[in-house]
Image (cartoon, rainbow, N blue to C red; front, side, top):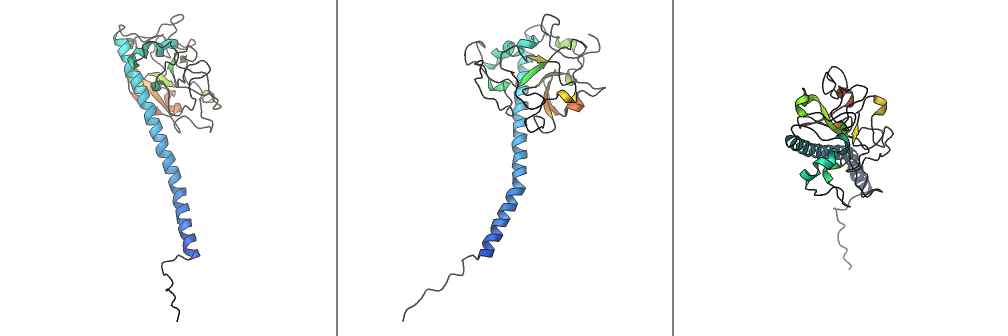
Length: 234
């Protein structure tokens, strides 16, 4: 007489397998947005850390130069020693502090320089009360003592794409895009290729007192607290 082993009762039926697959798929749909949100917050935090380090270097520079900030088109050259760069002009010189993690350009670029994700707030020729950095030709960069609202005045901000999401030529230690007159209208706001701002609905901004905030751009230039305005008199 032949004995057959009993059938295992632990086997899953097709229906049970499909139910498990359905549950896993549902969890994946629920978790992916959360993971994307966590990744975006981490990237924003890294960018904010970069800006705080830049702010610390600018404050050190000002402390050694009678309170004056560096020229706008060469600000990163002037503070490069505070990042351990002995000569910004040598091939390959760069620092990760100058690149936001949302900036997907990789270096070295065609100029043999690396991406710079930030620019300085230019003194606006049509309205010299706005902006902080000059070119030492038409305007001289302000002294910190000449900025009455340091906690509300932007000095450095993000700028590495245009309004269509196309990358711009903002590169470390290059004068081009070293300063900009700021986001003055909704039409000119830089965006990512997906149409969103760099950090969801906001950008990171470094203020003259060294602190960093993530703010929607509309809040930044809306009167009466226009954060591009450094003073009430030219």
